[in-house]
Amino acid sequence: MAPRDLETDIVIVGAGPTGSAAAWRLAAAGAGVVVVDKGSVFDPSTLDRNAPDWELRRAGILSSNPNIRNGPYDDPVDDSESDIKPMFASGTGGTSTHWSAHVPRFRPEDFRVRTLDGVGSDWPISYEDLAPYYGLAEERWGTAFIPGDPSAAPRQGLALPLPTIGANGRRFARVFDRLGWHWWPVDLVVGRNAGKPGVEHCTHIGPCDLGCPSRLRSSAEHAFLNAARERGARVLTATRVTHIETDASGLASALVCRDGDGAFRIRARHVALAGNASATARLLLLSQNGRAPKGLANSSGLVGRGLMLHPYARIDALFDEALGSWVSGEKAGLVSFEFLQTKPERGFVRGVKLQLVSGPAPVATAEGSVTGKHLPWGKDHHAAFEAHFDRIAGFTVCAEDLADDSNRIELSDNVMDRDGLPAAKWIYKVPPDARRALDFGLDRAEEVLRAAGGRAFFRTHLRDQAGFHIMGTARMGNDPETSVVDAFGRTHDVPNLWVLDASVFVTASVANPTLTAQALALRAADRLLQERNAGRRLPAKPTRWASQQQ
Image (cartoon, rainbow, N blue to C red):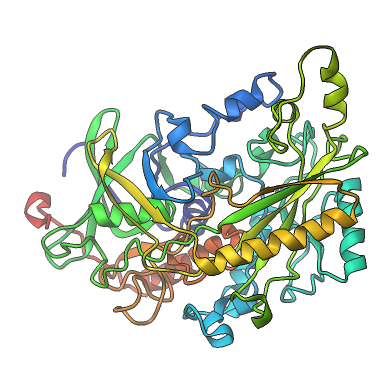
């Protein structure tokens, strides 16, 4: 064993929401855990949302798109053949360091799409299998929600108080009520210590949005990873994993890593992948060897296939009066699942989610980001600004895209990372049914905006900078020929290699995927612990590294 090599029970690739949750669960049970992340420890001061150049930095070095941000820890993504571009963070906490902190559960019917609608595939598990893990994750996060949502399954647990939906939310809630359509406040992470003395609180310097520094209290690092560290987990940052080694029997034996000091290995009895559905697929494909020429755990040929990205559109409206979105005080969002389920007369399967969003920030307002027209400069600027700022509101329309094997992640032939390895290449076209669903949703959202007093409407038929929800590239199933992992996230081909992120999703729902991915990761962690405690320590400690690499 080389001097810098490490050895542990379980090594987890990725310190985002799923990797952090699994690390917490495993370390709390006494397992030896090492977490590896290519990014650094997140420094919330880098956001500096109070600074006057906030919006300009958000479009550059603070962009959610790693290709635009191009930071020292970002891997490039070849998105030349994708309708939707990648949007995710690198570092401890993952994208939860600058997210909107919405953590809805999937609905029970989301796991039975084939049975209910004759499309896609059913999951090999049910909502009931995940329900206790949903509750566990919600409690650990510190989740605020309003019980009783008629579109969701009943759930146990005490909800933290939810911030108000504000005057703007109430305006639209009244319209939904008049139309007889479902609406409900979002499930929002407010933090386990929210409201306690000495804990950073929301200063509300703008509507809840990506990149808010107050989200520090609701990052996965704060909620899960720090507790895992306290229980003995070791977290390696600024560490890239180049591939996974296997031993003579085909079991995963080590991660080959690189940091600022060079290459080293992490030897482990179990390897768990928890980056995201792009990074996980890429690493499996990069780990091809003589035994697995198409990539590790890829005898089915499905690694990278079935990419789902939640395509979404947006419609905004201009109002005659100020809406109150920028009034001081933290606010919860509002969503409608009225059009969640398939209705044959609509001409598409599955459904859409409508979510109320506030209007643009000051610079974006001046630049006409919604209207497409710059406000005039000079003596007329302030009057024009007052006529637009806080007078725009809209809805995002998120469609459920079913897994299509032509939508996929491959290794790029043209884009390489700093180690000279192929970048992930996204190949994604919005499915026709999802396109029809988006158009339907835009029409319904316009009905709401018009009834609320909107007088001019602006449609964005597809948001391309929207690759936040990356799912489905190592799908779950009971049949090794039609899936990559089993019902617990263990790869069919390599019994000690696990996938803990949204790669395993069979279908996408229209709900944000983080909480469901975490519930799956926690369930997988419990399964792994059961086997560990029962003495099934796979694999045995490997020896003679060089000769065992396949």
